[in-house]
Length: 160
Image (tube, rainbow, N blue to C red; front, side, top):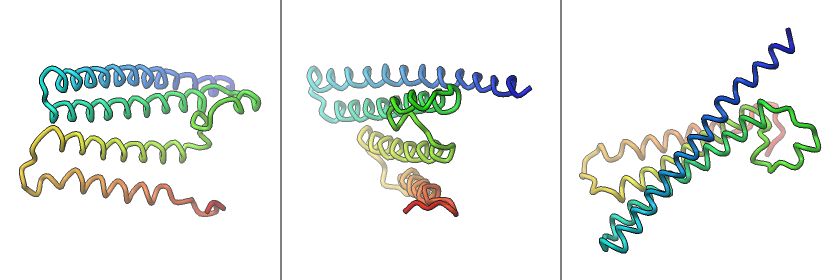
C-alpha cells in the first residue's frame, strides 16, 4: 500500500512537464516581442513602441525563467528521489528544502513579475489621470506586505 501511495508522486510529473512547456511558450512570446521591438526601432523609428516591446519581452522571459525554476523544483523536489551525491551536483535553485520555500519563491517571483508588468503597461499606454491607475500599484504593495509576512521565519526556526 505504501509503495502505491509513493508512486502517486509521479503524477506531479504532469505538472512539471506542463510547466516546462509553458516556459517554452513564454520564451517564444519573449522572442516575438524582441523582434517586434527591433522592427519598431529600426524600421519604424518608433522609440516608444520599441521600449514597450522590449519591456514586454522582459516580462515574458522573466515569467519563462520562473516556470523553468518551478518545473525543476517540482521534478527534483517532489518526484525524483535523488541520492545524496546526485543532490550535491544540482544547483541550489533546483533543491527546494520545503514547500514553504517553494511558496515563498513563488510569491517573490509573482511580485517581481507584477512590478515589471506594471512598468510594461505604463510604457505601452498613456494612463488617464484617475484613481484607477493606482489599483495595480496598491495591489503590488499589498502583495509585498504579504510576502514580507510569508518570508518571516516560522516560530521555532533559528534563522536570523
